[in-house]
Image (cartoon, rainbow, N blue to C red; front, side, top):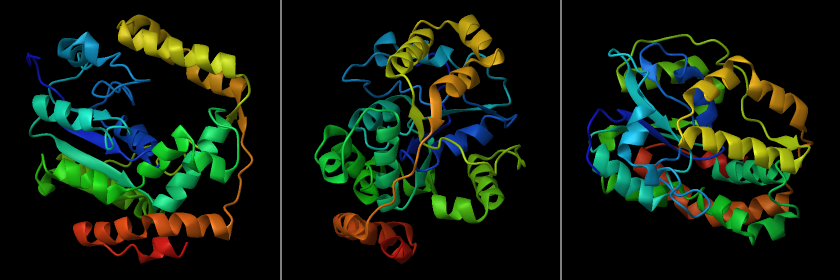
Length: 287
């Protein structure tokens, strides 16, 4: 693929269920940042196929056509961190890009993923069944941060990375916003609604409607139906859909036995991550 116009200056690689939606919500408000939408997934496969990568780099670049000269370009997709395809493809088009990685206690992250799958009805069953399901295996792998970050560090220098820990966000959101702005080289802002919780798991009422909604969104993106996407956004289509087809999901508490299983699986990776980042994550093992 041949680069004809600027590609993103930065990427947020993930991890899933670790605050990437929160990051998008406030960065999207920044006047010096252009992020067309979250989860474009250009550099990775979707359902086993390169739906968007097949469209070519010019298609991807065109998504940023509304960017102003003063703006830096960004791409946020939680699935990039785990993806070998993403590593190779992003390096080939953006070898100097900055990387933001959001991390969360992997035990809590896995449990959040489990509840999310129950809520959207992509899985129905207990903890052990989920652990042995394709969704569960993917969710478990997503929490081995050291292993995934190590692969990215083979391609990009460590100073190109900024790590945001969800514990720190919950402790002081504005402080973490300022750190991200400094890393990206943009002005400090105090965004609206940065304190609210986003992307909480909500139960899907009608699975058939959810499939139509997501298929329509992918189609509009793939065929660059900008006017349709714009009208959908200004008419509050997403809010209407969530109001009609989403309802509060009753949270399931993790048992101590389930927590111990996850602790034992992640303990070694957490230890290696502590050394890599120079951080103490011992509290992850105690929560």
